[in-house]
Length: 257
Image 1: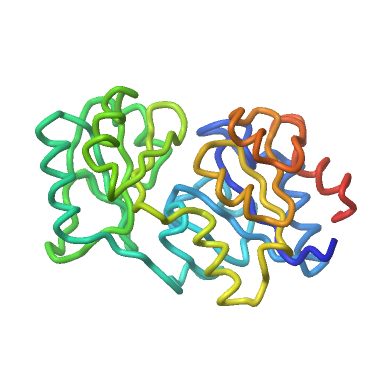
Image 2: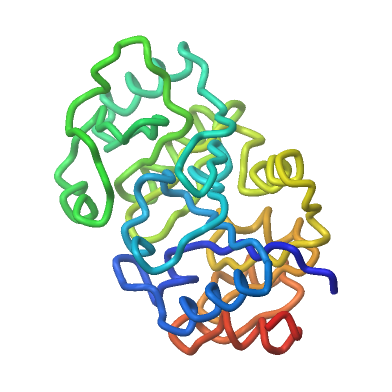
């Protein structure tokens, strides 16, 4: 296989779980890939400026951030962003306020809370939330959002805005709120536009539903052993769990390392 890029989810893929550090063997794998001239791409539901787990440990060539809504270079410069419609943005905020559903929005310059609930306290430490209040620029529009709460509440939002937004389980009590048709696959399409690297020349590692499109689209899609059954079913190969060195083992198996 002529692999030119390896695309990696963060939580429970590079790390052994949410709020846990990057697995040491995964750091080694990224370093070895880059020494071979293979691009390392981070693909996360988190914004490009808000991935503390990798800081000082992994130095990506590019970021597919906010589940494909933002594509940024290694210096965090945004090369492409997909902004939400203003009217839709306001309607979602009103709905979440009415039903007491926690929501924060991901802007290109920071994350801002628009409806605060106590459940948010359980995850704020792991997220780079810039403010518990709204964006200071009233005209600014986000690219994507995240809901915090119980599954039934997420289903409510999903049903209310099913033609315009996707609600995707991001793990624990966090649910990604993405524009319909935008996903990590979108980020891979932008990668090809920017670098010329085709999906067939990529390996993608993931564990959760927000990784599904890129695992399916990549030339080699790999599910983590600790991943969701949906991702495992779509993958070309199921490696060991993140904590059991699943990333480096798969790369060695396919002779990429």
